[in-house]
Length: 214
Image (cartoon, rainbow, N blue to C red; front, side):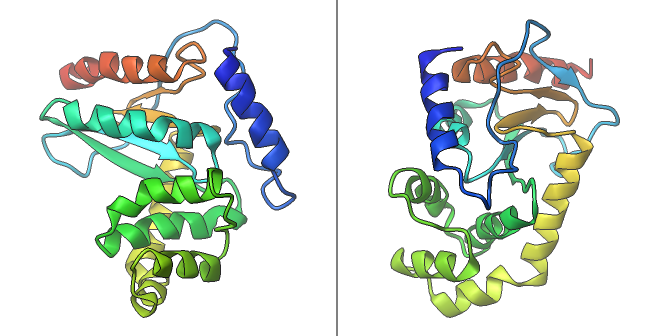
């Protein structure tokens, strides 16, 4: 395991509270094996004619926070027929508000706050684990608090969070970040040799396979 992974895992272990102790979002060492898995049945795309790359992430995951700039950079140079779909997942009920936070920010047209949530949790050590704390933080970022509260509990946001959970179950996601290409090929830093860049490289390799329907 690389020094970076050792440090992140150490930080993750020290920072974990009783509330989030059961979570399995920390990437763990893996023995030699394939760099991807085939998911069956395939998860259908919501984007007709596009290859979806689903990023399963959790705001509490230090590896997701570390990879976010890499994913953002990759998305800017991805092929025209590829679309990034970010999927917040909850390994237990305590994480469901974090799913709703992501979809609330999207609904309020504030996707720019996505990376700032990672920074708030992992760099500023803010406890953004309840709706009230999230609303306070969002308001500090210029979001109308009333609109935030209304959107957070809206049918649309709750439904999207539930669907994200269904996708995670269908893809058998047991750690984050994980990347599902074309609804069929699943990879992660662990499967790609305990490497963040390796996971991005593997996604790039899997896109032509998804395009060709292999």
